[in-house]
Amino acid sequence: MRVNLCQIGSLVVKTKLGEDWLGDDQAKLGGRSISAEVIELLSREIPTEEELDRRRMAFESLLQLRAQQTPVTGPFQSTEEMLREDRER
Image 1: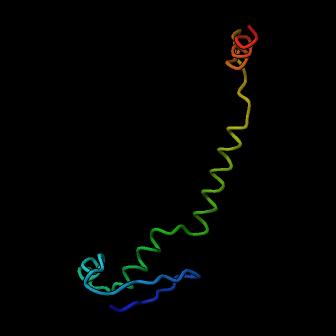
Image 2: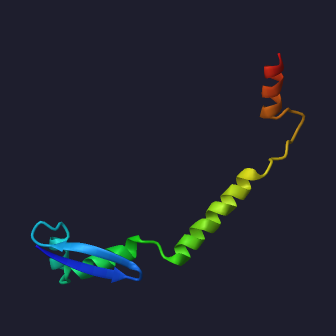
Image 3: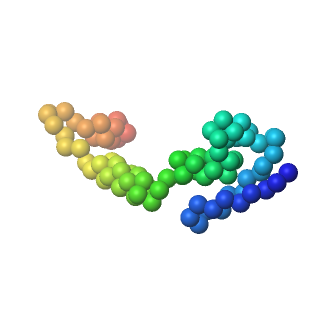
């Protein structure tokens, strides 16, 4: 069994080369080495810095929306007010 090290940026991946490797057939069908297949899979599945920033911004905006108080409309009490009244009884 051979071991191959692939590097993508600061990420180093150790791949096992041999007949028991599951990606071997897929790499052979594509006419590429297993290392090239691993590099393609990792580059497709590992999020980029831009993607991570986009996810952080989306998460922060969701947290801000969640923190906002919804305005009470109409003559009805809010759920919190009704619960407080029930607990006081």
